Length: 104
Image (cartoon, rainbow, N blue to C red):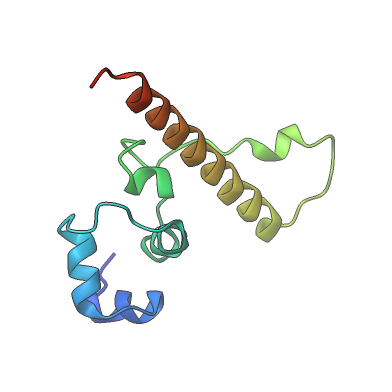
């Protein structure tokens, strides 16, 4: 995908300097409010951006797990985004717990 920094900045409502700071890992704690739109703009998952997934290629079998409900593509995408959010939340909690366990 070809996208300029200016195009990405416009999609996220940020300036180009901020995008360069994200790209250069100068911002350590990227807000979740930016992570989701950034992943969407880049057509990847938030987990992929955080390095939790090696590839964004995955099997999507979510429709098979909803008791025959007829979900729209938009609803399935929202469910998938929520799943990614919960995975991130779980991972962050685990990291916090590990930090608390380390002796100082």
